[in-house]
Image (cartoon, rainbow over all chains, first blue to last red; front, side):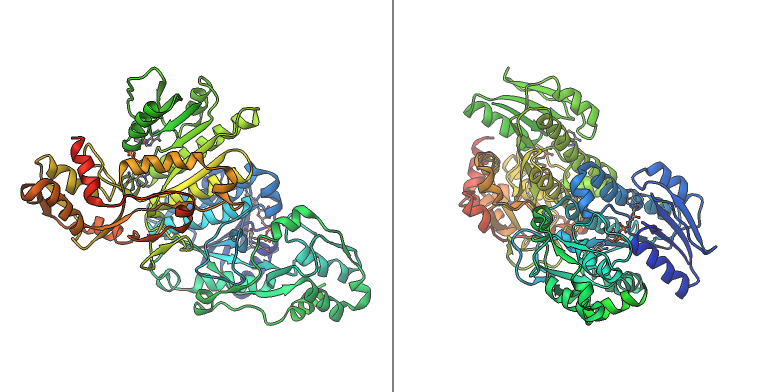
Length: 318
Length: 318
Ligand SMILES: NC(=O)c1ccc[n+]([C@@H]2O[C@H](COP(=O)([O-])OP(=O)(O)OC[C@H]3O[C@@H](n4cnc5c(N)ncnc54)[C@H](O)[C@@H]3O)[C@@H](O)[C@H]2O)c1
Ligand SMILES: NC(=O)c1ccc[n+]([C@@H]2O[C@H](COP(=O)([O-])OP(=O)(O)OC[C@H]3O[C@@H](n4cnc5c(N)ncnc54)[C@H](O)[C@@H]3O)[C@@H](O)[C@H]2O)c1
């Protein structure tokens, strides 16, 4: 099995590749704009920009045909909002270029690659019902969400045509994310756990009653892998289009801080400082916080049981 | 007032321009890939391809700033389905290029153009409820519908950013369309009236119980013009995203043939031949036939009252 991973230098990309190396015999082609290093001969890494179609074509020409693809490369919500052109280049053109490359592969007699695309709950916004269902219309109120939604439909069309077998899933906010704070507007949902558990101050830009739809890193990687195990008919059910809303946990900032207190004690909790940021609050307020993800549950996707357990797992790996 | 009309050589483009010339003092810049001729000095016509961003920029640099834009240029459903790349170039890149040109105009101190985009009920497909509402999720099962839907969201994002004030409306099938049959999969919905009323045979590719959501040409032009009279806040209501479903008439082929009999007599009716075409039937069957267009009605859009009246109007202009 030869697997392509884009965004391989990112948070989920690295965790995914580590998991694939540990649990499969696959060889992996890893792409990212940032420098990559993997400690396995089974990974071949290339550094370049997916929005450069010529680079992508030349790169894929050097490797074995792609049987499975995890398309994770993206600029995050904060960056897409701050730099309109960068967002469309990375998040829409990048997706288009991957699809075109895989289309050329199948058109020239190669395999029809099975692809998973990481969309986001940020496709939802505007006047949302209290609980988002599979029948809720997406109205993203940020460029990142628009780019993700456009990519979902584009992937649906390439799939309907038989050029690729693409499946899009809408990831909840993945927490606790290790490493440094990033430019995602939801960065606080990891920051208020990650920094205090390491003795550092973390600023909370939203109010404590703000709720977030959360999935742990391990469950996110499991969901992506599960997506590629499903038969074509089972996943698509004859209808090509919007992505599957993944299950998650609806957790308020207060509940997250309770978990922090339980795992890290009062010293950790004291490191969280409320520093309201209207720009973050405004966009995060348009994101949905609670789903009834029936289609996903029927397809066998599973959420985490408990946020405190997620925090314990994170703390144990520090 | 200076108005830009793309797709100006097409059916709705020509009817719109005639109406604007008759009812306003506006000057008009008319764009299309096909040769254009308008009998008024108030229209300046340019022939070129909207997917050519450089041509578009050079063209718009020669004319006054655009205050209003009717973006009608598109390849129709049959062509977009037959030629995947052409469809994305014309229907998605073309839209993107228009938006970019208008963004540059406002960025360089010019007006923020008010734009109307002709989306389509073909954005709907898959497992549809009997009556489509404003809360029905779009899942287009054809490339044309995907391109229209992606354009809607793209326009929403440019509008949210303040680059342009774009409004997308989903047109029902416009009938009766004069002229020749075209490559739209819904072409029969005009053909079975137009050809028989002129003594010609018309082939019906779908069954007679097939229903179509219809708007007359005059009502379509009125809807486009109405769209640009609405205040920003009224149209958008603070939420940027999917288009407005326009009101229409749900008419079955049988009912259309009753109207044909009434207006054209039994000789006309006898010219309709049933020639089932599975390719057309399959895609048309995924289109919705009945809407509860509440948002549109609240915004003051109106449908026709009666299909026989539409046929009479068409016949009177022959
Ligand atoms: N982490 C979350 O909470 C979350 C939630 C919803 C969706 N997602 C999506 O999941 C995917 C992975 O998320 P993550 O948290 O690992 O993000 P990340 O930012 O850690 O990783 C994304 C990687 O993509 C790379 N990249 C960006 N533009 C590129 C380009 N043009 N060419 C090549 N590489 C490029 C970046 O360099 C980065 O390494 C992304 O698509 C993200 O939008 C993540
Ligand atoms: N007529 C309908 O029933 C109906 C229904 C729903 C939506 N619409 C939409 O309304 C709009 C107008 O419809 P119409 O019936 O007048 O279509 P039409 O085919 O008669 O006219 C479209 C025009 O766009 C031009 N065009 C196509 N690609 C172009 C490009 N790359 N650059 C410049 N010009 C280009 C064509 O040459 C044509 O003259 C279209 O966007 C169509 O998709 C129409």
